[in-house]
Length: 179
Image 1 (cartoon, rainbow, N blue to C red):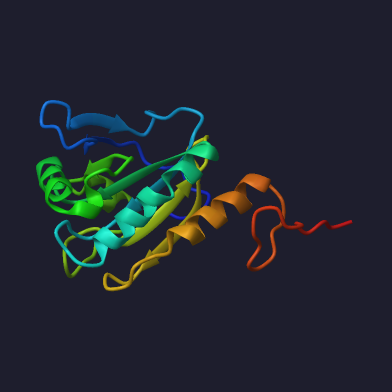
Image 2: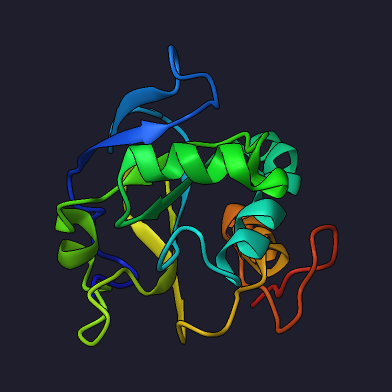
């Protein structure tokens, strides 16, 4: 698995960005958001039960991430058309403010090392990538266990201090200063 300190692999994927069929799709690549932090998270499958809770929660926090110069990118191995149908039929996903990447060939999830060997879908993985394209945080949970987007935001805040941050550190608290 690609881990902290490694470069985010190059990718070029179709993404679903709206519910309107005439403007629903775009192409996104690893250089689409120059100078931004990336929050790249994967979910196993569309039209499931745990996944929409995570997507909706990331959507609720989107403004918080944008205020920190971070772009959320959600991804699964489903197609852009399945993403569109899911957005159109799930009330909590209708207004998602970030792209849903379609890793249908499983190239990015395979390169990142998060393709589940038993299910053949992306594992529930989260990556924080700095503006230079370096992975600074990785978290993978069991397919049945949802992640905490608030914790991803907290870790982003800590990384952006570029200082030592103690356990449970929150934005605005003192960092550790070594003399």
